Image (cartoon, rainbow, N blue to C red; front, side, top):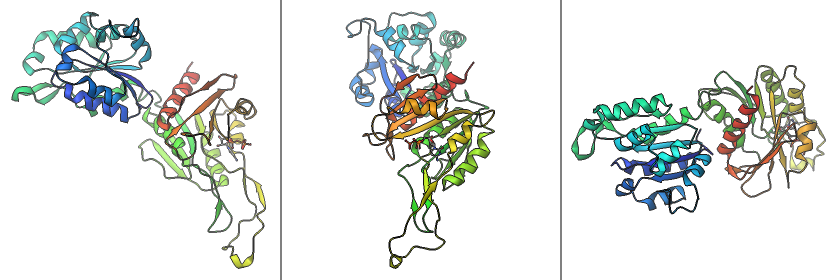
Length: 393
Ligand code: CTP
């Protein structure tokens, strides 16, 4: 859910700032791009170098002295979400009042996306009406509040006021960033490469690992869709993914054509063999029998079968290319897909078996975007963002 998302993590001056380093690390592990803003007092509790090392970018502190002419608007334009953890009583007060005299609050004011705030302070402070009033004002402005939890506090005290744990903040951000936005959608995904038997032992296959299709299925399920995954590989376990295991193009075609009629969106990421042995042997071909003739025949064009359905799902095809994806625009039209995702399977960091992918996406209207090399989870997130935008009225 967080893969490829651009998150600003704001850190203010409380002891819980020691957990913010771990939170930043978890965001990065989840594939997010993270920039941090520290208030001056936050630096009393956490070293800026720690955040720089974890996120790859030094924290920003103030308006002046940064390279940017207008760092708050530049950062606000960059971000998909702002998370402030920990948020002290003073920061809650400045946020509620819109006091933009520090970079963090200024960035929040310039930002129109989701803001998540994790308050942390001593129980006695938390129970004072002022922070409660400020939290209520922030909630009515649409800010999401997570925590505080009850537990051990600095100085040996106990009670409510402890910052929510990083995992809880991650989960809350996942919800805010779109879990549930595809609730009720029926999604069909294909993954993996088909295997076309020569004999009971051998097959004609390809190098597809199924990772891209799996990432697409998981992202849709995380967003609330009900997903059917037709795959030749091991399927990820997820409560909203129903996997149908297949091996050959014929088996995949039967499963896909059955399920596609019920789907709102079909993403056909599988690498399907175009040819199969025409007469697979019943028993193992022996060396002593000499070199066998391998007569090949066509497999069904699964995608064409889905494109011909009336009504048909929103259809996304994949094109595995060797070399630049120059033919892909024509392919998108010829195959009558709504989107075509093309990748150069021979490029470094792209294609079969890698954790990352570099793709170009073509629309039926000729629109074309080249995306940088990203994790497959990030490609999946961006692809669903595109599909959701195209399908929304
Ligand atoms: N596909 C399919 N049925 C097949 C072969 C491919 O449905 N028998 C689907 C793939 O799942 C993918 C898309 O078609 O979504 C494009 O696959 P690709 O192999 O690039 O297309 P081809 O038309 O076979 O193009 P090429 O001649 O470049 O191999």
